[in-house]
Structures are given as C-alpha cells and as structure tokens.
Amino acid sequence: MQSTLYIGLMSGTSLDGVDGVLADFSGTRLRVVAAASRAFPVALRENLLELNSAGPNELHRAALAGNALVRCYADVTQALLRDSACRPEAVQAIGAHGQTVRHRPGAFDGTGYTLQLNQPALLAELTGIDVVADFRSRDVAAGGQGAPLVPPFHLDVFGGLTGINAVLNIGGISNMTVLHPGAGTEPVTTSGLLGFDCGPGNALMDAWCHRHTGAAYDNGGQWAAQGSVHGALLAELLSDAYFQQDAPKSTGRDLFNTEWLHARLASYENLAPVDVQATLTELTARCCADSAKRWASGSVRLIVCGGGAYNRHLMLRLQALLPECKVMESGALGLPPLQVEASAFAWLARQCVLGLPGNRASVTGARGSRILGALYPR
Image (cartoon, rainbow, N blue to C red; front, side):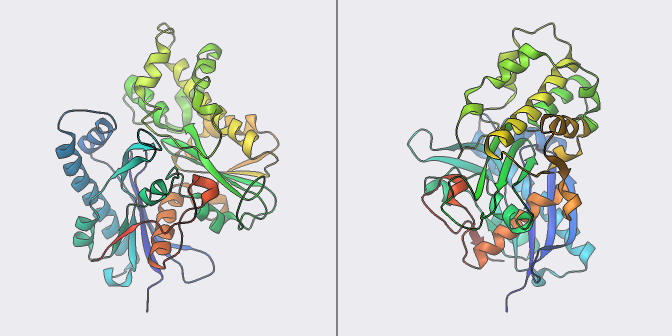
C-alpha cells in the first residue's frame, strides 16, 4: 500500500536557499505536517549564480554544485523527518526540483531546453527515500515552456474560492496563475486555468540591494520605501519586449539578470542607489499588476506567495495598483508563502508516482498533458 506522505523540496531563482515540506495527502486537501528551510552556504550561492551564465569549466563546476545542492536538500529532508518523528520508509517519495541555471524552451533548434542542477541519485542514497526529479523537461519536449508548473497545484489548493482569483508567486522571477470558474476543464480560452511568468520578482531587487548595502535582500522593502521611483528609468525597463508577449510564456535569469539591468542603467549614472531600488520594486509591482489587469481582469483576490509576500512595500504597491482586488498573502488561506512551492513539488511527485499528468497545456503551451518527472528508487 502506498504512503500518502510526500516531501517537496524547492530552491528557486532567488537563490536564497531550500524550502521543504512534509505533506500528507490522505485527506481531501493537502496537509503540511512539517516545514523546514536552510540558507545556501555563501560559496554555493555564488557558484550557482555564476552558472546562470557561460563561464570556464562549466560541466565540472555544475556537477559539483549539484552535489552540494543535494546535500542541502538532504539536510532539509532530515530536519523534516526529525521534526515530524517520521521514518524515511514512511515517505512515498521526495519531489526535488533542482536549481534552474538555464531556461531556453523553444530556442535554438525549435525545442530548446531547461536545465536544473540536481543529483537525485545521490539524494536517494543520502535519504533512503525514492526521489522524483526532472519535472520540466518532458513538458519542453512536448513543445511547452516547462514553466510555470505550479498552476495545477494552485488550482488544487485554491480552486474552491468564489469568482476569479489570481495566485502570484514572487520568487526570483514572478509567476501568476489565473483561476477562472470552470478551471478544471480544458481547453481553456477565455476562462479556466492560465499561468505564465510575469517577469522579474526579487532577483533584480536582491542583487541591487546586496551590491549597495551588503544585505542579501531589502527586508520588508524598507530601503525601497525611502527612495523615489524614477519614471523614465521605469518606462525603459518596462519597454522590454517580454512584457508585451502573449502567454504562454516563461523567463528567468537568462533574460532578467544584472547585465540586463546595467545596460539600461547606463544613461542614469547619477541616479541614487536608493531610487534605483525603489524603481526596481515598482518594476516588479507593475509587471505583476499589469499581468493581472491583462489576464485576470475582474479578479476578486490576488493571493501572493513566495518570499516577495514578506516585502511589505511591494505588497502595498500591488494593492495600490489593483484597488478593486484584495491583495493578500497565501497564509491567510492556510498555506504560508514559503510553503507553497515546496508543497507544489510534493504534489507533482505524487502525480508522477500515481501516473497522473502534472502539466496543463493551457498553461505551458505543450501539445497535451504529460506525466512529469523521473523516478530514482532508494
């Protein structure tokens, strides 16, 4: 008899560390039994960031970074087991997303690729638990974006709410799920389930904050709140073609990176760093709010998860830009912001083990539903 316990592990484009949950699927809704997080060691974070762009000896460095990443995954797994008094053999599988370092679906040869550093075989050895990994590549092989993968999970946990609702995950990159009434059916045209990447989330804000203050991120958006938004710079940032693209669409640090930012700052050398931070925060707020207005018009709620949900200044700006919509963090609905994505990969691991599809063609643009992930037995 299969267990209903699954572990989900997520390390996102913010590159701040690993979030993990032990989830129980025995009831009608997912229940988080335990949650744990671990920050990345500084050297690993820097290595992962460097591997987002071309550099020397990449294959060797990527392989070792994958090993180091998995040891962080194993530490979080052990913390989950310890905190819940759960034995490894009681867990059906771990869903381990890996660390995305390149994401170019559809590029170059018509198929493109998405690349997540991971060592799932090592994780199975270290934990004694089956591991499901490599969730994105099958969707890309089927002509999809391979991202975002969380909208079907959002439908599962937030789909019972009245009216039109949008779920906004603000990690390094921001992505949105639009839940229309009738989202459980396909194909989707003007109603149903839709998902896409909005654009930058925390990545540019964090990088600029670290460069000028030494802090890993702008705690609560307090630094940005002291600055003034520079209208001309904001307009230039928002002029990137990505923001006008139709969904399905996805992006990452391949596009929205420090090189992208510095190229656009070249004409604003005398701008105070705090004003740049304010403008970058407004960029994230605007690209998310504009996405909601375009694809989730009439939304009753904007449910925010990911680390960005704790940026009070950003949340206030989202509410100001979407006055007719209630902007709220996901914890108000029973699933704290830093548990949502990890829970999604526990859910995706379960879908794989049960032989059920994990993607939605209306979200990724794939040719149809596919079972996502590869299983590494313990």
